[in-house]
Length: 266
Ligand SMILES: CC(C)(COP(=O)(O)OP(=O)(O)OC[C@H]1O[C@@H](n2cnc3c(N)ncnc32)[C@H](O)[C@@H]1OP(=O)(O)O)[C@@H](O)C(=O)NCCC(=O)NCCS
Image (tube, rainbow, N blue to C red; front, side):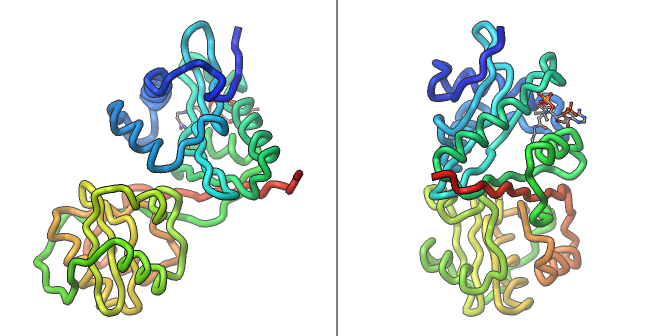
């Protein structure tokens, strides 16, 4: 018999959730098989909320999951998945409804997620649950670092995060939000007209500047750590997207950010 229950009440540990995640994502549209430590770190930095998350269980196994994070009055779907042999039975739909009901009952105002363009099944699921696309996001890889010819200097996280907030025309998505990345090992560059925050593996979490030339300087400074990956750049940021294209960056994923606004039931 299948039971659907919050992760907090399920009696499962993160190891069981990790095994289910690896199985459900084994045929994912892009390779995504984190080891146990990376999986736990990603859940923790994003604000995984065991009471807001739901699993479907059969015998002693997790067969489906909705891993959800809470921050203030927002919830975010870190990841949803159903093991291959259990798909098409409405499990993800049931878990989604349970997660949305729990969010409504907790007075949450909006539920957010991202879905990769081309993952038609998942997008259909989210639309069926009432989510709508709010914006498109591009992910870039810049494989050819070039020499540092910049007027950027290393600075502390708080200074650079504030500078970026002043210059940016858009909010970072959940995984690049200041709260998510603040506990990570980061390299932070400030420019008099902007800033950039780079994490492990050359991931550019945040970058913004008031002028294109400053953006270019910041990318040059960032590229001294190796090749760069920019995940979830707002497609509407033409200045950054066109600069990256000109520099030869490869757009490897396009995502849709989706939101469900919840009625206030409290
Ligand atoms: C996406 C996923 C979670 C769906 O799980 P599931 O338990 O099979 O989904 P459900 O049976 O609850 O289907 C619910 C709805 O989703 C949509 N859907 C799910 N899989 C679909 C598919 N392969 N093709 C088209 N629509 C699909 C349908 O609208 C379906 O409702 P319907 O059958 O009434 O039309 C599952 O395919 C999966 O784990 N995929 C790999 C990981 C992944 O992509 N996760 C999402 C990351 S954003």
